[in-house]
Image 1 (cartoon, helix red, strand yellow):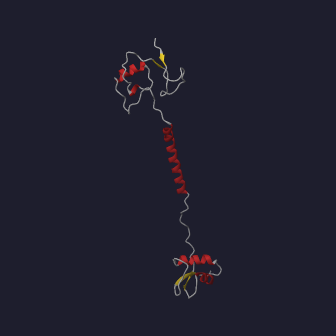
Image 2: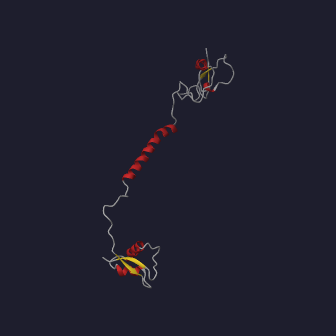
Image 3: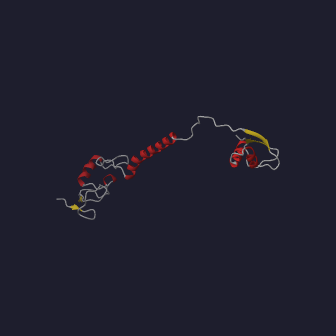
Amino acid sequence: MVTPVLHGSSLWTPARPENHLRLVSAPDPSWPTTPTPPAFAAGTSTQSRTSTQSRTSMQPRTSTQRSADRPLTLTRRGRLLLVGLPIALGVAALILLAAFLTSQAQAGESAPASTATVEVSVASGDTLWDLAVHYAPERDPRDVVAEIVELNDLRSSVVQAGQSIAVPAAG
């Protein structure tokens, strides 16, 4: 009769995956006392060792070989990658598609209304504000000054005497 030897902390252990400690039978005295090869290390019984030993003739298992009795299992990180990566790529594709379809950069249907301008020669002491109030009194002078700067491609709102500039006309 074979008496079991306890490897672990208690006699009774609930069903656990194979990498946890469990109750195994006593070693066979006919076995050599050399260390167990890596292919047989994880909690196998004496009977399964003898059948595995004859099958593999004590050759260590390579990293590309998988144990036939254990199915392939995914880790938590593997499941996250397998499920999360396609979902993340799908969401990114939907965001790009939505951004493309709702973009505001569309061509206008009508040409912008042209502004009537008057060519003015700046007199000594004139400012853009004075010209805006004189030539477009019904509009806000700030808007007219900004339009004068844009029309004449000025770097600042300072003008020199004798300079010829385009000023938006009233109307």
